[in-house]
Length: 423
Ligand SMILES: NC(=O)c1ccc[n+]([C@@H]2O[C@H](COP(=O)([O-])OP(=O)(O)OC[C@H]3O[C@@H](n4cnc5c(N)ncnc54)[C@H](O)[C@@H]3O)[C@@H](O)[C@H]2O)c1
Image 1 (spheres, rainbow, N blue to C red):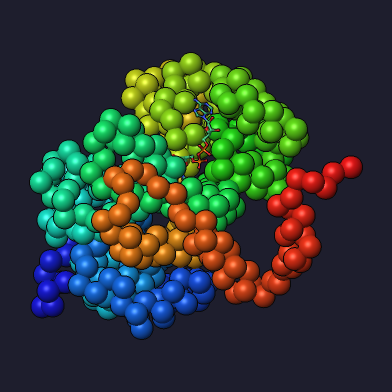
Image 2 (cartoon, protein in one colour):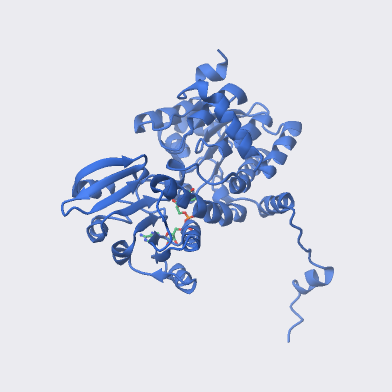
């Protein structure tokens, strides 16, 4: 048995062929990452470097792992959520691409954290996280290993929030690049990617018609904006709930109805949380909901709906379809919870489309290279993706799409840097 096979824990290596076919399909839609992979194969920026990766085990992540491996890295991968692993992809990564993988779809929380520990056992020198579970476990349980790590990257809003809290507490042990905050990440992956794939998850789970329905979106950040936009496009009446007055105003002027969350819960046929916050939907919301409502979450963690309160109110719970658990309340009202309140686009569908993950993971690959190039010089803080890398990803994506744009003339450049010219 090869060393990666014996070191891995996946559901079924026999799924490798099917997984590889899907990885290749996604790769065809990831031209930017592919061009970076070809360059990495020539330049080998990660020669012999141990990279610990905690990302959703999807076809797109597989192509990122291939890119790191092409650059000379030894990759150990675990999942960023117990329901996100595509077992065929995990098998293909081990069998065909030389990664060590610890991830099984539907693993319980003990196994989830055992798999994170297994990745940490490889003593990573570079970390890649989605939600900061790898880095927070490293800080909490292995402070001695922090010195091995030259840097890390973070994929999502909720992970960046946690890492900023770790930095504010003076405890962040190495520099981390907030890939989420790149313009070519959150404007596209969070907005258009999640906008499409969250609805995809709802449709695959329920096969419902959205036209004519009331869709309530909790949180009008990047993800919420995308979900609202696509729900409107599907013919739904969209209601938005916010706590940020500027974003609430944006939603109002975009043409959505803006309501307090209990009123929205009472009105919606479909309720979707995307706030990165906890207990956004709780007892008073469940008590207000209409019969047969669909409830789901597109935020990173499964804390956006208070599930303990829902269980307390439920007289009966039954699995009515894959990914649909129906909670029957005392008065007979039914609340259909999708994907156990976990991130619906990954748990009930396949996550964001490869074409947007191309930009996110191009940022990941370039941020990792940046950390290697600047090793020892960056402070142990949360850093942004350098603007030139962000713009390079946009330029490469435009080129792949066959879109040409103008450049500033010398006169325009001069005009934009003078103060003398006015009225
Ligand atoms: N499903 C996916 O594929 C995917 C992709 C990217 C990000 N995410 C996750 O989605 C979540 C949102 O990410 P984002 O980039 O949109 O973040 P964001 O910070 O841009 O937006 C979050 C919004 O929620 C609002 N909010 C916070 N608490 C609220 C409450 N109690 N009620 C109503 N609104 C509230 C905030 O004011 C903010 O406008 C995060 O957990 C992020 O990690 C998921």
